[in-house]
Length: 166
Ligand code: ZN
Image 1 (cartoon, rainbow, N blue to C red):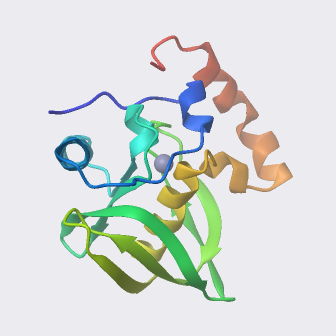
Image 2 (spheres, rainbow, N blue to C red):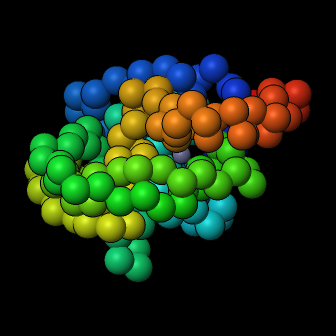
């Protein structure tokens, strides 16, 4: 089922997601809903909180296919960082330059409950960092400088004035 993506400033986007204790049918269905919702919206990453589910599940486009990561954790991060443009399905039309670690190593469960590690760099590493932030209620607008924030202040205000954020 395709779900509705919550838009900023919906307060649910600021909530912390809970660890998945057991991979039930319900969790699998939720993960597949997320895959379909992300594909429909032409996204390359999606966190469960963006569809109003406070569970630690993300979808990330790794290679050509969207993949499911449950309870994802960053276990290693490079000191080297990269500045690149990012978007977010919860902020339609907003693109910001964000500094992120160039490489990250992730540990997560797949939808079968198997633990795996994945080392990525560049765009996929950026997707992981962006989506895992979502699980902690952190949004990409929290990662910009004070000056950048001043510059986009008006745009953020416009998001607040819209009434379709639910
Ligand atoms: Zn996002």
